[in-house]
Image (cartoon, rainbow, N blue to C red; front, side, top):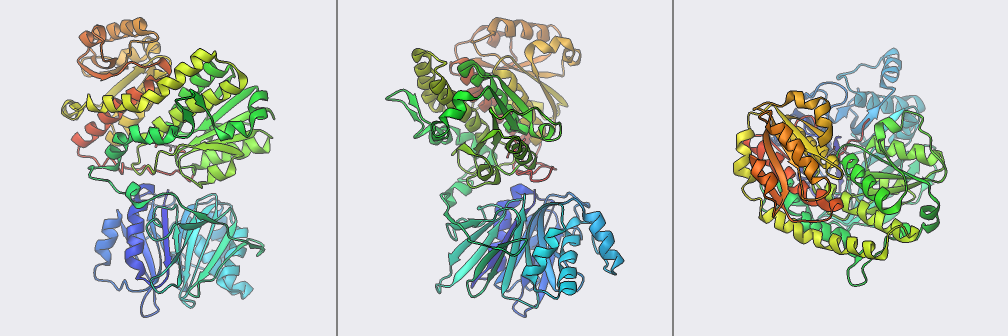
Length: 619
Ligand code: F6R
């Protein structure tokens, strides 16, 4: 949901900002813009509709010199995606330029108030209201920009991460945040002087410095060319910046020879999951150790219920986690859409554990759900991928996925990373609560260790999906069916297809099909059935029979030695045998590849599907 970049230092800012925008393009890509204090000490703003490449083209004949600038890539919330609604926005006097990620909820009343005081507006955005409000505060309170930002933000309801330039103070950069992420990188220029980088996350900063400060809610940061950095809250009370060392490296951010990030991330899964289990799962001793559970043992021993809050793909992995934790730990688990949970007065007990699952760690609804849980006294546990993200910092304890940065908008390795992390969590809780026999505990651990290798087998043995996927280019609908642990995977398979190929798809529990969706089945309807030789295999075989007798096209995911379902299918993806609870980890791969290659065959940009953004920081 919008990406922000900023730079203040000795280098030319424009190339750094553009590179940063490209890295943040996964957050939104309907328009982009840049503001620079140019060599002539002008405050220049350039913007254009479309992706960052369009902005670069628009800037070719412009003055892009200067060593201080801010930039933005947008995912529209207020006003259509066009150049005038793109950021940065000038204030009326053109003394200020501001970029913003988030939503100002009371922008209409603020705008009306400012208009009453004679201010005029160029765009329909909430962001322009913000920059105008700041300028208004500077005028009425006769204060500097740093104080005016604090005063203005006190009047704002909503979410913001902002960066601002001031023409009359061309050596300072100011930023602030509330409920939208913002990171400040602190580096050294070639001449040894301090330089500053700003990003919606650390990706635009990697490669320049590994020293960062994460701004907290309602904090405003001031940086200048002398190397001074000061942070204060909205009451101008100074806060000591906490410097953190980033662990991510540049290689992790590149496509590494793959056509798309999504494809790279699909193929990375075996190693990503090895990293996820490393240090947590001890194969020699057949044991699981999660510090988040060990450090909070009493909580996990005494809890009577777990509630998992998540959105989208993370909600699907949470559902798989529910099945596993209920089976392994005998604790009731409820899975909630964070967006529903936060607004429906749910019953939350003090001995509940609320788990937030989020790749980005920035999803606004999930953040709000955990705040509600905390307000009601529950213990909140985070399962996030992005280190230092808002959810990771807002939770009482948690476990990182450690699957590396996920750049493709459609989640792949984070999904399997979440499933494996929830399994580790289930095993760690079962160990404390002694709800599994030693034999079963060790069997599950052994099998979990085999998963990365079995994923490699799956990738190597489903290489012709690209050829096969082409025949679905013109399909309008798909059904995905699965039972037990594979029902959430059916939902995930359908979501993957929808989001990147724009083909309508539904996931269903296989047995539910005859309660309605079967009416849709005809010779034009491809039905993807996850049918491993485990669990309710015979029942799934009967479901396939029901579809076949209505001429539906069967695409199945089967165990390698299967002959029955293979014989009934129009096409088969094969996976190695594994325990029921781990089938989704393997079966996810062909479903991810199917959606990828269908989208490619339709000529679509899989890494940047229309209307989507990687990090949903607005509700
Ligand atoms: C789908 C996808 C989204 C996210 C959802 C939650 O491929 O990526 O559905 O899963 O927006 O995002 P996180 O996990 O960052 O909270």
